[in-house]
Structure formats: structure tokens, C-alpha cells
Length: 246
Figure 1 (cartoon, rainbow, N blue to C red):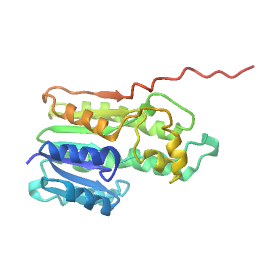
Figure 2: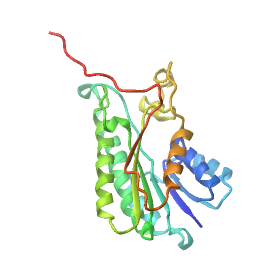
Figure 3: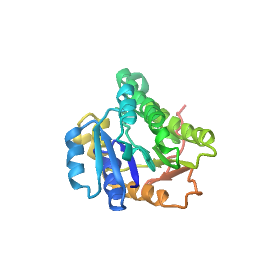
Figure 4: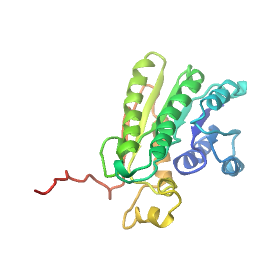
């Protein structure tokens, strides 16, 4: 049985990826906070699956799930650290300190917990996908803490590759650009009009686009490692430097 574990599997990239890997013959372990969404997903999957209502910020809960996986589910081939979020886009001085803490706890500490907890289940080889963002490489107004957390993802992934040398475990950071999922609704705390305005006039990535990239990388020969991959829609490129007027 080929097994993939996905965090943040109740929506967006994680949801699309769970369905795509299921179609590719994987048994999926789907983790997310919203149990009802996971139950809906499980009802659609054709292959055996497990679901866990799990908040990756809860260190004890993450390690408890890893420790108590049924024996036949313990040989994980693909681990996808997808759970993550942005909150707010105000300038640093006007932003909410609690939002900073939630982003750090989810995007950094949650990533560390899940990687540390489930790594022993990949000891026979496999691939770890960590979801970064182009915000981790290119700043934009209001991306201060969110971008910082995603810059951490990239460097952590590179360093993890060093530490796993000789174990036949691949590590890849996927850094998407603008993609229409629940991301902006979460960022703007349910303000759908503000979230929708982000995508006005833009041909954005879909969750399926990113899931397809992950599946294609996972299918590469096992001696091939993609270290870091940015994925943007053609409509998105880079802004120039900003200069203050005199």
C-alpha cells in the first residue's frame, strides 16, 4: 500500500492533492482542523484512507497521531506539510501581534512538529513536500511576518536535505504564487469581497495546478530531487523597486 500523509487537507492545495493522489493509487492520511470537511473528503476517496482532526500547532496531538498510526499505515512514502496561512496585510506597525503568533505557530512550529513526528515513518525512503510561497523570496507590502515564515520553510528544507543524506529521502519546497483557494478569505478573516478583489483581472493558479506539480515531482525517478520550485501563473511577474520621493 502506497501511503501519503497531507496536512491542511480540508481545502485548497491539500484537498486537491488528496483527491489526485487517491486517483494515482495512494492511500491517504488526511489531517486538518475541520472534521466535517475531512469526512466529506473521505467519502469521495476510492482507496483506503484515514482522517485526523488535527491542528498542527498542537505539538502533543501531532506526536500522538504519529505514535499511534495503525501498523499497516506506518510506512509513509509522501509527507506533505501543507497546513499554513497568512493573516492580515496591514503594515507591520498596524498589524495584530496575535496574527503574527498564529502564523509563526502554524507555518514554522507546525511544520517542525509534523516533520519531526512523522520522519521515522519515512525511514525506508520517500519524499517530503513543504509548502512555501513566493512571498518567502520577494517582499510585498504587508507580507512581513508571513513572508518571513515562508523564507524559513525554504532554508529549513535545504538544511533538512543535508541532515537526511544517505537516507534516500527527497525534500522539495513548492513555492506557489497567486492561487485562488480559501487563502485570501482566511487572510482577511472572512471578508469575501476583499478576498475576491485580490484576484480581479488576474488569471491565477488553481489548487489543481499546484497539486498536479506535486504529483509530477513525486513520480520522478527516486534519485532525482527538486530542491525548490516556484510556480506562478503567466499573468504574475515581479514588481520593481520602490523609491521614496524627495
